[in-house]
Image 1 (cartoon, rainbow, N blue to C red):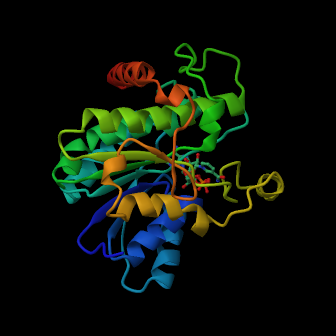
Image 2: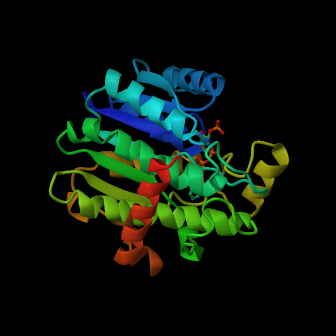
Length: 280
Ligand SMILES: NC(=O)c1ccc[n+]([C@@H]2O[C@H](COP(=O)([O-])OP(=O)(O)OC[C@H]3O[C@@H](n4cnc5c(N)ncnc54)[C@H](OP(=O)(O)O)[C@@H]3O)[C@@H](O)[C@H]2O)c1
């Protein structure tokens, strides 16, 4: 990997898959902008990468995806400091067991996993397009296969099921990647979604019980292994013809669920997301 001179923004780069993605891309010589909500954890992650990658070019920016004001402020900071962004990796995500709402009143998984990343991508578009051949990598999940879109649930109106909400938000990630690629087919922007594999991380919570439980139900992969598809999509030079596709953890293009291939649904989600962020 030769990424010197490239600027790569990663959300949620302080933990799990995002941390290891940042480490590998920094090893390749990229400037890695770590967009994180908790500065203490972000500084610890930066120190951790710096210790393993001498000379790593690492920058921190504050980003709380549960607040659209924070997303807008973060995008402004990034555009001011790095007017050209080669790769945006929409990686951060969460899986709360109880219903929560974002600052703007959206169901937390829809709000953080999809809507905030939608706004971040749109807000960074001038800097992305300035890179010439920018990439947007969206960390989805095979759980999107269980997902359906209920447009009346985005503000937490319906009874909450954590898995249902997670699957919906991850279906949004796959649809968003496809629609983004379609809309930008003429201007050089490339976009993908991916499943990283079953990776033992903090996604189900930081407590020992949560982490152990998650490993027991099958999250056996290391975060380093789980970062492989994100790193591949951010850096491989032979994949431009697959823009819009969904990749699995073995770097293979997969069709994704039937709903994830529904172009009318992708367009409807895009329009709904546009009006939701405009009104918040
Ligand atoms: N692990 C798996 O098996 C698996 C499988 C399929 C897909 N994925 C996807 O992989 C991605 C990364 O997850 P992970 O497994 O690496 O979990 P993780 O270790 O919990 O990392 C998630 C990251 O997202 C950040 N985040 C959560 N809420 C945020 C917010 N409101 N604002 C900004 N950042 C926020 C977390 O920040 P804090 O550290 O501050 O909490 C953390 O940096 C997610 O999109 C997840 O859906 C994971």
